[in-house]
Length: 87
Image (cartoon, rainbow, N blue to C red; front, side):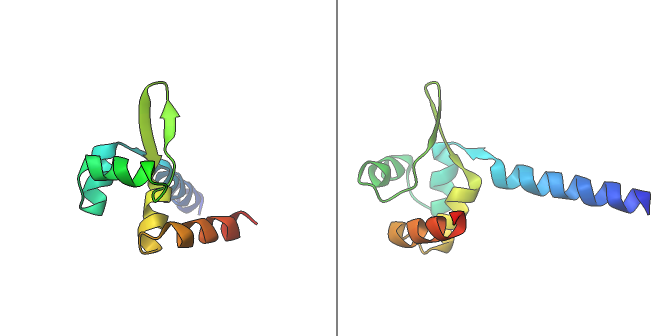
């Protein structure tokens, strides 16, 4: 029984790490099937989720990118879903 609980907790931590992983612009572009420059254009036009800035680095949360894709790459749907999830 104790091993099962330890294994379950390990799997939960690994799943959380995948969701919380930070993606580079190249990784985001690959997931969307577009160029890195197109990601930057979408961001500049307000049609893509805001990144996390770490010094000079720019990264996106894996969960945000996944949710954006699930919303059909529609920023209005993404924002509505994000606001609904936060409430």
